[in-house]
Length: 236
Image 1 (cartoon, rainbow, N blue to C red):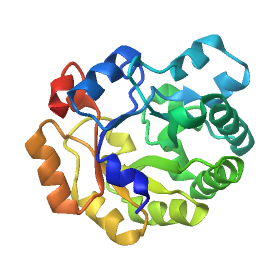
Image 2 (cartoon, rainbow, N blue to C red):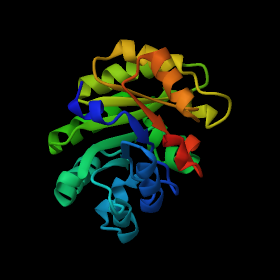
Image 3 (cartoon, one colour):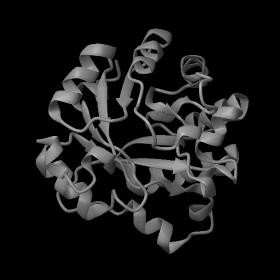
Image 4 (cartoon, rainbow, N blue to C red):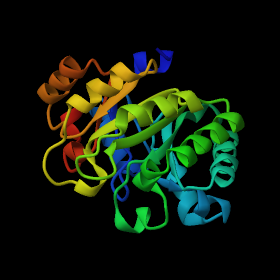
């Protein structure tokens, strides 16, 4: 297991409009081992967009942060990942690629969970970023794209083969958005499919949930998203 995930077992997920500096500071204070930035547009960074760059600022007392990039062009993603690494140095824990966001405005451009429909392109993005940076590269995705069509275990293997150092899986299909409940068993199936660390995500709303998810799936770390929204105390 990457030595990283031995230290970072409890993670605050990347959430657009939520995981800003102030919120990350609160969650770290309550016990989150590491927090992710809001998802950062590789395209926005490539235009040296100030609004985008500001998403990379660290909170007071934040020793390290994980940065989540989204986009679908391997070259742009790799170039911006290299720029982030150069800018942030030791403050960067690792780079995560967003292949899970189901929001219409993201997937309509071919970003986020739309990449689950194009595993070849998804793998080439991971390969390109791995070749451009020294930091660990992780991938966050969902159970699958279409309702009922689970592709996560196979997708996870492809990401591992492309060089992903860890994978985070959310137990819903992209078409489900946030409806219904997350299937934790898919996390166990992904864990069986790959050798890299697996981060479980979806419907963790309490300490007991985090313990149950880990016990049921054998996942290496737990990522909390909406369960922390308005409730940083969940980490305590």
